[in-house]
Image (tube, rainbow over all chains, first blue to last red; front, side):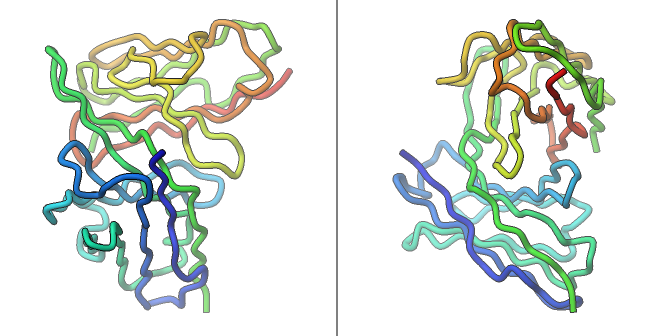
Amino acid sequence: QLQLQESGPGLVKPSETLSLTCTVSGGSISSSSYYWDWIRQPPGKGLEWIGSIYYSGSTHYNPSLTSRVTISVDTPMNQFSLKLSSVTAADTAVYYCARRALVVAATGYYYYMDVWGKGTAVTVSS
Amino acid sequence: DIQMTQSPSSLSASVGDRVTITCRASQTISSYLNWYQQRPGKAPKLLIYAASSLQSGVPSRFSGSGSGTDFTLTISSLQPEDFATYFCQQSYSTPYTFGQGTKLEIK
């Protein structure tokens, strides 16, 4: 059974770079059927899609964060990572990694996040 | 960005009730709509994808419908474990966006 586990510092200082890693177990990150996403949830708020990566290294970012975000993949380690630079208190959130699956139907190509990590809380504070 | 608006924001109901949650997109998204359940302190869990397809392992009391801009999630007979927050999410175009959530509480 595929599992995802986020890891990284729980406390980051303002203006520094937040770095998180998602380790994939029970399956290969190099599968052609999946993308690998980062999503975050500020305390008591809704969900925000940060961006995604394909095993080939192709990335898509949320335009609201694109100037500060880098997502990378390490296929031998079966991991993908998130870096968010110049953080402020507004970046305080639970950060989730997720697998985004693709199903091809007669009516179109449908994506959905079917496996999620448990999430890791990151606080930005001095 | 496509804005997703859910209603209501919160809902009180009893075990056994039939409940419907609505999600509206700011532009047409065909059937590119997913629903997730989130229990307190837990990660979201996929319930429905492509507007009406039930994810494997999800009880059949959950169903989804709609196309275009208006979508619904229905729980036919509420069970104690269904009291949680529900989010819709569009997968029509990036950036993928979520509704603000509907918190389902016990009456």
